[in-house]
Image (cartoon, rainbow, N blue to C red):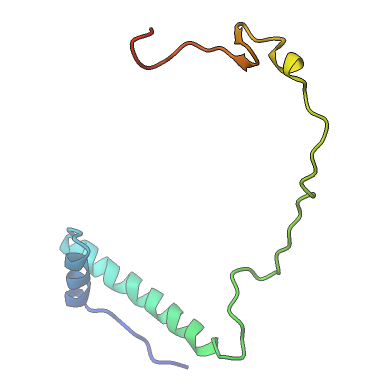
Length: 102
């Protein structure tokens, strides 16, 4: 078993200063314990992370589950514009939302 790593209040205050975070004495005391637990957890993982164990981001291998991108039946210009309130040639006509044309 590995030794326990701990951060004292002075180290936590220094880290807070580097991060430009204002902490009260109570917050520093609380974070000292919490950060020590995190450091110990990282140390435990580091013990078992050996070169023969490949790094992974997911416990189960991922695979693409999407269908092939094959063009299908599409609307004609007339079908697409049939419900448009206004059109200009083969395009939808919309009023400007910016500028002087309002």
